[in-house]
Length: 188
Length: 187
Image (cartoon, rainbow over all chains, first blue to last red; front, side, top):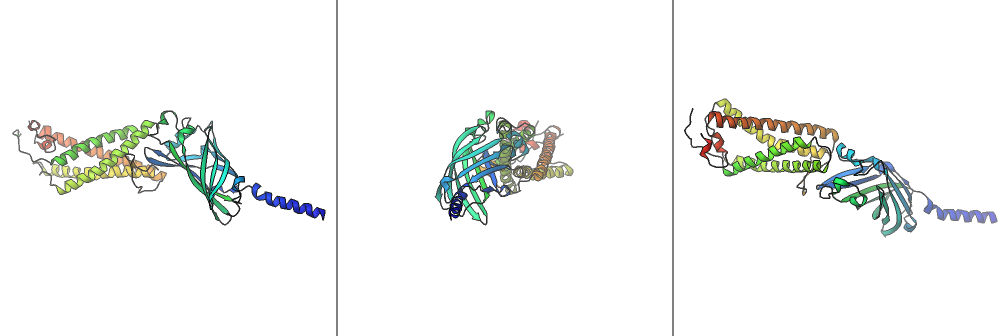
């Protein structure tokens, strides 16, 4: 009887704890992180091909959510071979010195059905800035898709330094768009 | 040799304005195009590429207006010359008009295929009529270059013929397209 109680208490505790601790898994093949910059009014699409996420998220308890991202900066594609060759240089991403960009959430709050604001720190090229990222969730089968877009100022992160500081050439605003597919997220 | 001034029927002032404006625009765009393609990536290169595209699209639009004008206004009759020269002149004019459109169109398509849609003056986004595709972009780049050199070649022939009429035939042909009415052109 005593053993039974202990076991059921443990099971109960585990049962409660499990959703909060369970790590949701990113499905990279069905995920996308893109960025759109403007060069003299011309929108130029870029993409990061390699990134990973550590997500502990229960839609029922957004306050307890922990979302961390790391993006492999060297995996960026952008327009032509000429612009890509430029991207890794010190004036732009300085990929050798700063191979990764990271995001770490600090607070998640629900803003509507399936909608959340994720606040956190975005670190690119060694510069850290607070951002609030609106995320919309959609579920289909075992997959949950989180999508959204937000704007960063490239000069906050010294992306496009030196001769490229001129924002009439390359706009300061860069739109970041993402679509992330996760498995193991609880029902909305 | 006929050295007496002849009364020459001239092109309309609008046609003359189109001719010289576009002549300058095309020559400058061609030279900028030649210069910029070998530049290393820099803000200057980016600027020149965009200016070149804006100029190209402006030339395209002005050429459309010019063609409309040409189709609705009869040009002056040919000055007397051998029939083969007449045919060559008309052929060259037709080739020029075709290339006024073909060169910018190939450039526009090349830009689209390379993943850089054309936004004229940084304000007017033009549609992409080809998909973003690296191999296609390479092909269109070559096409744009070949057509631009073809245009340069026909322009040189056109200028050469005009100079021949001016300095060898001295038949006042150039006066038909000269901005000011000037008898000094006929010596």
